[in-house]
Length: 399
Image (cartoon, rainbow, N blue to C red; front, side, top):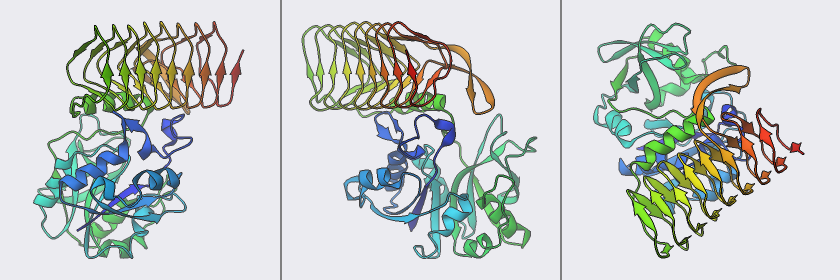
């Protein structure tokens, strides 16, 4: 059976981390989100994969190529305009046989979600569902036993706590109904509207309720929660060089050609990528992911954070609950603490607990403090001795 992964989306609400790559290629626990979906399919025996790509497609295609290095066979189909999930699925009409699995490449989908739909296969179109305490912002399922009676996309007042996970077992009949799907209020062709059209015409659509929690990544702070969850399951590898007087506790993975200098203290779960230099006397605390080619200078402490590839972190810095994108250089005595705060994304305000969120290829001088919840865009230049209290737009010089 072929598996289809929808990976064409941009992820506007995750900016500044999606300016140069699609949402599915943001690294969490040192791997792109999309890689976890591919691994889950492989573990379920689904090795024939079609990726629907669009926004910044080259970053996906260059990383995964034909898929053989990841234990699968990958072909690519382009969705030139991102016009919704039904439109994306329509692009694979010539690639699939009668039945195929569909999942989103920008959410963390555990393999048991896929196994649930394969193990409970009834011959009908099937949707994987999950109970949520707050179903607002999700597609809501109204069930009748194993049958789906109604699918309502993001209702303001959900009539059910049973929600759509975005994992489907479909057949070719769906393509006829995609052609008849009306455009939604969001300006997209939604697969949920397609399935509702099939229900209205008498087709039986089943649902399988998953017991496991699916991790949805919508906003930047969701990356930290997903990172913490994935690090609890990391495969520990010690491939670097450790100098004397180093303490490593818990599940800590250290990549090839990485040097951990004397006096460092590392507590897992944590991952340090390849070709890094940490310390001396640096402290890495739980739920921290450090990418490849990263330098963390001495007496710096990092906790519950994501430091992406090719970053340089200066000495005597403190970073907590923060995300620093690749290619960013941070001077000494940098402070970014994690606290309860209100973050603005677009026109909406969100109460969250987070530190700073710094876009790629930004340069930050010495003795800079960034308030919790502040978002700094890409390619910014922050001069030394500044206190950044509000969001900084892309390509801004703060002098």
